[in-house]
Amino acid sequence: MFNICPNCGENRADKAIVPEKEGEKAIAVCPNCGFQHKFIQLPLFILTGASGAGKSTTCLALAAKMKDVVVMESDILWRKELEQPGADLRKYNDTWLRVCKNISQSGKSVVMCGGGTPNDIEVCVERRYFLETYYLALICDDEILDSRLKNRPAWRGFTNKNIKEQILYNRWFLNNAQKTKPPITLLDTSRITVDECVEEVARWICSHLPKSDN
Image 1 (tube, helix red, strand yellow):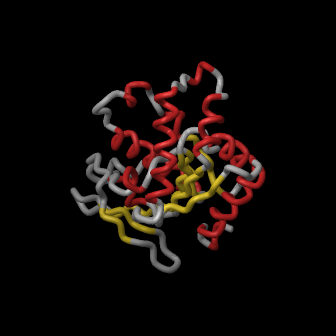
Image 2 (cartoon, rainbow, N blue to C red; image 1 turned 120 degrees about the horizontal axis):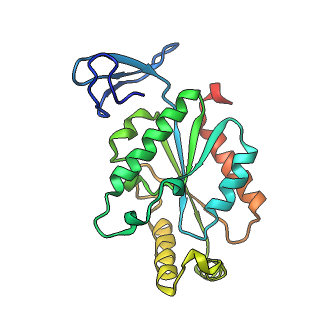
């Protein structure tokens, strides 16, 4: 869907986007032949943060709570080879955006859990198919993050080196959330319950959904 033009057959993700007008859908224009394809352009929600900040637990509960969005865990497409130096993470992110683009044609926005930062997503060719991208990072105190990761089962493979890397990643969000474009909203999970966290995330999502989706 979308990337292969139904008119000329070219596989092009870099279509020109004509924003929706009142009463009309957005249009993707094939750069090869000019064919115009109407589609539903919705916002995309990225729930991010360091490992141990609470993303997976929150998303599991969020999926059960919210029926007007589709909640996806980005780790389901992750592969070990992506952890190697020089791995093409931009291709991985574009693949995820393409998945979200197609899901959104159901008329529901996607919440992608674990989706990185604006520096990772905004440069992707598939980003153009979304009305807006909204980012929320779960953060917590260093000591709490350290404790959560050390208490994970051994099969998760968290070493002292891994934990230090995640603490630094957690600090990156604290130091850079307002510097990225678009900026990242922060939610501190250090001293709130899972239910309270889910309520806050759901409220944040609803505040950015198009009125027709509510």
